[in-house]
Amino acid sequence: MTRQKLVKICLALGDAYEDYPFNKRQSKILWTAMRHKHNKKIFALIYEKDDQLHVNLKCDAENSEKLRFFKESVRPGYHMSKRHWITVLVNGDVSWRGLKVSAPI
Image 1 (cartoon, rainbow, N blue to C red):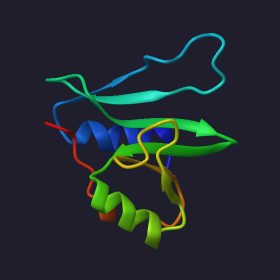
Image 2: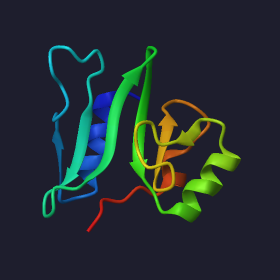
Image 3: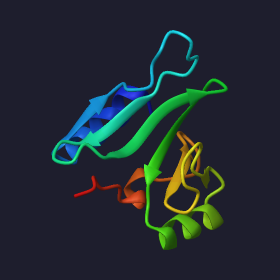
Image 4: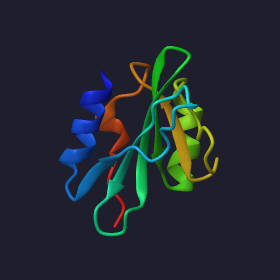
């Protein structure tokens, strides 16, 4: 899985767009924010850290706990609310179909 493919998956959810709000010259991490067009809320953040691709995903509290418990590559949200966000190590043990990611309303 590549960054471009993740962006394409998020855009296919409909009513979404990609943004790069955090990228300053001093930042070593390139962040791709996926936002809902209507309210501009971020529902996914795609970035590389330690030479590995990660994605932070908005998730309800119950599902985030289950995913973290059962999947090794799912962790509490990096730089986000640990209750409502998860960080997924891309190309780990998570099926993208199993995540059922959806853009917020």
